[in-house]
Structure formats: structure tokens, C-alpha cells
Length: 249
Image (cartoon, rainbow, N blue to C red; front, side):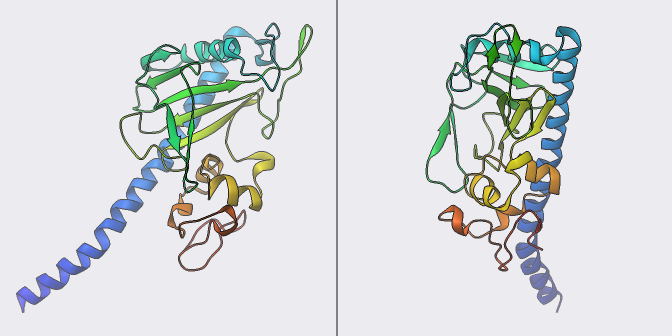
């Protein structure tokens, strides 16, 4: 009888422990992403306290929304990293802080960036790059993209650094939007709609930061594997995740 009981316990453990470990790992990812968001915003705020209003940082840059402004993003990177605990500063000349590309969640390709995007490895084991900073000028004044849904630029974060994890958008790679009002999770603002969630979070994965921080979960990873954005975000129990349905439970 003891052997039978032990056998039953073993079977139950084999079935439940993997799910417990998976849920624990995702909870840790949620907590880490929230912490990273706070650290980025703190660095952004401290930099503006030292260097003045953010909207004045790029007034002399000759670039528009359609041009990758190398000087602007290097300036932004240098200023915020002054107020961050960096273990390695790769700048625009070294590898080892971010992989050169990341996989989309379900879409069968990858998204890459090159060494013109400055990157760094942080003391907390995460890394980031300033993928692009846009500036739009009208002579001496800044006329930038200053709302959450129309950002000045983008930061990509690898929450477990370049040598660990899946290197996949929505799992360990997340995007943040840089604005004149601070740094916001990708997928927020006007992008917070059912159609955009189905395409850019549940299918591509690169606009899931808002979902994770707002809902405190990564339940879009509990869905049936999508083959297109039209069938994405469908839970295994048939629920369709949306702006109003935030969990598969």
C-alpha cells in the first residue's frame, strides 16, 4: 500500500511540478519587467533634471521621423546610462550586450538591430538598446512625438541578458516607448485595442510590455499557437484574450 501511495504521489508531482515551475518563472518575469520599467523611468527623470527638458535635447539634430538619427539615440543612451548601474557598456562598437536579432513570438522570422543602436548590460542581469530616437525639428524648437501612442523613440529590453532565455519578443524581449513625458510600455496608448493586441502582442510579441505590466501576467503564452494574427490570443479553454479578458482562467 505504501508503494502504491508513493507511486500516486510521484505521478501527481510529475504532472503538477512543471506547471508550478512555469508559473513561477513567468511571475518572476512579470516582476522583473516592472522593476526594469521603474529603473528606466528613474534614469530618464534624473537625466532630464541634469540636462534640462527632454524636448530640448534634439533641437540641433538634422533628422525626421523617417530617418534613423544615430547622433540623437547615442546622446539619449549616454545621458540615461549615467544614472544606471552598468556592468558593460557596449556603446555602438561592441557585441555582448544584446543579440543582433530576436525571434517574433509566432511569426516565422526575426527582428534585428545593428551596432548603430547603443546597448548596455545592467547590474540586474538585463540588457537594453536604444533602437531609435526620432526628432522632428522646426528650426530652434522641438516638435516631437510626445504622447504615449506616438513616441519619440524605442528601447528594446532583454530581461535576462544576451546569453540566457528564449531571445523572443513577448517572452524575454520587450519594447518600451520613449516620450517627452517619460518611458511607457510598448503596446499602450492608442495601441491598446483588441486588433492591435491580436497582431502586435499575441502574434508578433513585440508589443506585450503593456499587457504584462497592466495585467500582471503573461497569459498570452497559454494560448493555442497562432498561425496568423486572426487566430491569435485564443486560450486552450476557448477564451479569447482581449482588452477586457486579461486571463485564460
